[in-house]
Length: 109
Length: 113
Image (tube, chains in turn yellow, purple):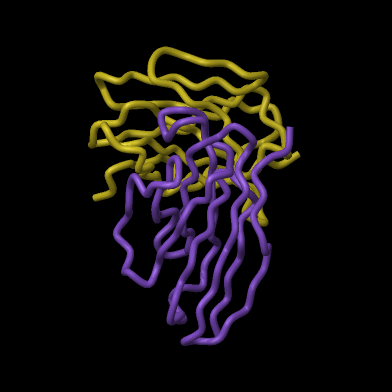
């Protein structure tokens, strides 16, 4: 069992739909990163959060440290949102990031 | 400001050779981490350097090594390359470590033939 689990693994949506990607972890993590990876490999950091909720444009990330769960929401999805979304967190007292397996999102026009 | 720069972007090497990859972090960032990404294993942590010291290490054989220079630039080296080392190698820089926002480079795609 992975220490960081994401669901779903694959997600298909129509443009304009509301998207939710979930991340659950079984180890102690001091903060959680949400990353976006487009074809070609480049990774962009979307959020880093250790409590509550953050919003950037159409993206919203929430985290519940006690429940060891985080969600990434995309409102009014667009084809350019098509990418792999990865959650990751550093183990407590280390700077070693452990990663979820990623969620592949495809948004069709 | 300039982002994280990795060189080279693509590399083809033969089994048994060695390779050195370079990562220039964002100015002011003191932590540089390296990751390997393969289709089968996903993203895996290799090591993290902070102020020229290796602070954290993942579960990779000793053929994988790295270093960080006084200007925070980092290199990683893989010796005696194996076919299974074919992967995308990513580095990320952050101010002080993984509890701060990480900025990733575009990666170096290594193919071992």
